Length: 397
Image 1 (tube, rainbow, N blue to C red):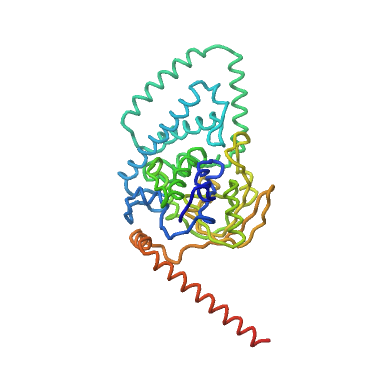
Image 2 (image 1 turned 30 degrees about the vertical axis):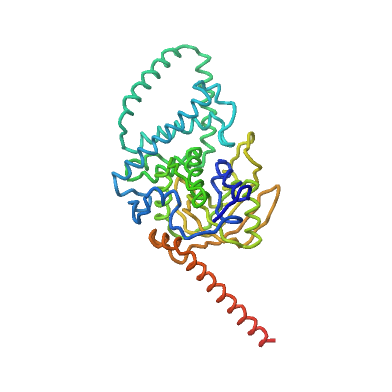
């Protein structure tokens, strides 16, 4: 995988932080040489290139110490991201309605979502972090003070009731409303808790995914050392992969940036291979997938083109209604390209014949000539098969 200044690959790398495109961003097309890495590159970095580093049984953690370590790190990254937003946009909620975050969220949405993530972490994880209890007590005193100052005021109560009605309407439309936090309690359910919070509060999911993408795009040319959310990204990917079961048809809807779309068109023409690193989350129907794909209408970082993918593959159903696939390897079967409506792409699963160990993968990287010879051999065999078919056709005429 190589890149040069100004290439499409380097422009895609630069745009990989766009939260509108990160959920369905892919590896493939100009500038990419897909390798046989058994893990996401960020997971490879986090585990110190050790096989069997992550202790999971499907969506369950089996090592309490490892769960506590990853949870504590992730809690700290979420808290730091929240503090960064409050520093940028101010503490006053009135100021959170202006501007945008990552071309997709209002500051109000991003701040509110991270606060909810921290709340659910504390409620469900069962893991205590040193110093957090004191902070919670101080925050509780502040809330009591605010409640006292707000006593009285019938108009305010009426406004509050109206707001609750509006919130009820939103909840009714929430596809994840039947997903109970109770089912994610305890350290062993940490992968599920991360899955829930990154789905219900997608800004958290986008923070995880954008750093994961930096490690994928920059693996060879500009190796990344930012390990924010690396533990969460790695645990999610490994646990979902371990939990994937029977094949099912899944629909994914989202957006491609202009440079991503050019690579996609190139892959469509060649019926090429592509990899979706990290997690991709889809639905049982195309209609559901489209209805739940959202973009921010103002402040987009790049031109966005809607895309719908469908594939029959192994997946795990979680968070009430969603189907998740980890590091999805696929090949394009057919497509209907559209510049203004959604481009619809039918994929077929293209899992490697053999999942390499990390040691085998490193050996593969160190000996590219062997890999190239293997590819040449496959091409020769393919040509021989085609020639045999042509001979048979001639004999039949």
